[in-house]
Length: 402
Image (cartoon, rainbow, N blue to C red; front, top):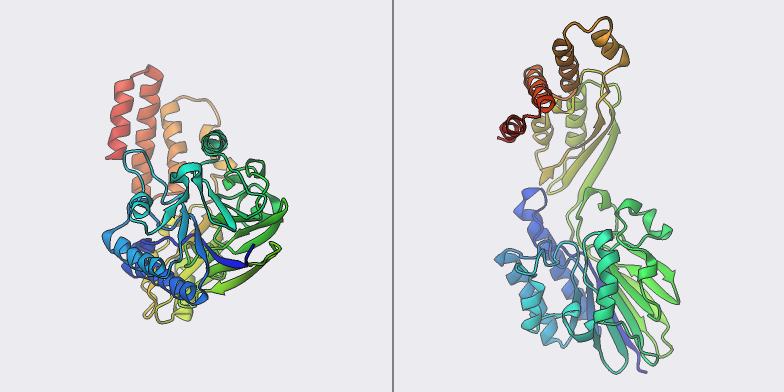
């Protein structure tokens, strides 16, 4: 077998208008263009994209046009692009389909799950790819059926690559990614492969798995403030004649700068929290940056997140592209003594006492005027539910939606 190399990239998220900003959509496009520039310089034998090439299954025309230009460059350089869908660009239904299908038909990419036996191979390498099923329940039900339809058959005399887009339920992975969001047991991943090319986790990660290497290449731009600290880029994988693997990290350097600042605001009033966040933003202000003040802690009794002035916080920056406050503040529950004081003694008027309770509950979250409105609605719902008046219940609920 001859020596060869390939690129493993994932989570490109083309077309993502993060924070409803077209500038962020352009950032994701630029990151991919830089990745293609670096790929052209590396001259690999092929490229693997392990899901979420696009942020939507049907991207905007401007996003599609830019992507086509980059894929044409790779095609003209005789570098095949092997793709699986991810949780974002998978077909939402059989009618809508995914943009990956026409790109495959045009010969710009090779959409692995669409092809016979879900594979691509040449004289030295076998690549097998599975679709994304979006949830753990669907994955556990539908992936075995997919294997039955298009059986993975790694070759004994070739280097074998398995391509997927999901978080596996493994301690080495769930310490970076919540276990509750893991989409599959590792038992669903077949043996016999030398390299497992993963997507979905936005942090670069490599571990030994079965008798091969399992790798997540991370994202090419910041998809969430929580992964802003991680390197952005992809893996360049070189394989020698003995199937020994050398994995190199290739960083993307032109990504948007994120400045994430966390503060514990326990005990501060909403007004004080607003002032603190304004100070954080002014100190972090930088040309073109995205500033993310993450405000944590417990609000004082009677205070709500809705009282924090987000407009003032966002307006504190003069040079940043955007300010995106994140409120991880807990609202204090109604003290037990207040509940007891409402319901103690004889219940002469349950409706009045219920109203008092609902009012206290909603005042933890809304202004007094809004809390009074919601308390009255809650009482009406109770009355109609007890009577079994479904029409009135529906009328009240529809009024809430409006």
